[in-house]
Amino acid sequence: MTQRVEKARISDATEIHRLVNYFADKGEVLPRPLSEIYENIRDYFVVRQGGRVVACAALHVNWVDLAEVKSLAVVEEHQQQRLGDQLVSACLKEANELGITTVFCLTYRPEFFGKCGFTLVDKSELPHKVWGECYRCPKFPDCDESALIYHAERNA
Ligand SMILES: CC(C)(COP(=O)(O)OP(=O)(O)OC[C@H]1O[C@@H](n2cnc3c(N)ncnc32)[C@H](O)[C@@H]1OP(=O)(O)O)[C@@H](O)C(=O)NCCC(=O)NCCS
Image (cartoon, rainbow, N blue to C red):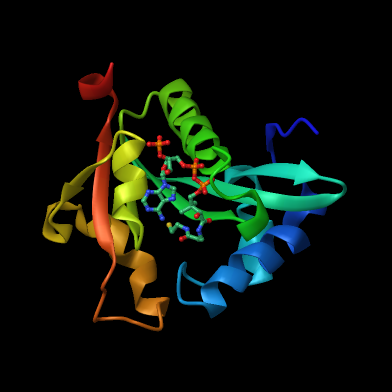
């Protein structure tokens, strides 16, 4: 069956919530309340199969020329099929269309993002603006995620 990356619709929100919080329970991504997914539904990309969302990711704009890839999740049975790579590419393409050349992520999977063209940086290099939602993180202030940045002009 063909699997395509598409922009999320509002009807995907509960499936995105289920998928993200499944991996959040395993400590692999941060949990997201359903209300936040509804409010930010335009950020999300999904891959659907048989009425289910089997993979998702979000591009969230933080500031002038800065956006974040968030909530990347691929169900186990569809991992290693390049869905993660395609979702990150969709986020980077949208950032480019918006005129944003710098995209970052905070992740427990730095090797995966490295393969997508991101470079490991010290967290202190990220602008203060990005830490706004960290106060709501259960791990704050002991963040053990890695920070990586993608610069479009360096990857052109
Ligand atoms: C991490 C995750 C998004 C990867 O998605 P995926 O669809 O399985 O990955 P892809 O098939 O697109 O892999 C692309 C490349 O990354 C590699 N890769 C995939 N998962 C990896 C991992 N955990 N560590 C290192 N490399 C990884 C693949 O081998 C492939 O390499 P190649 O280009 O040399 O062939 C997926 O495993 C996942 O959802 N995990 C649970 C949630 C999570 O950890 N999310 C990320 C936190 S922000």
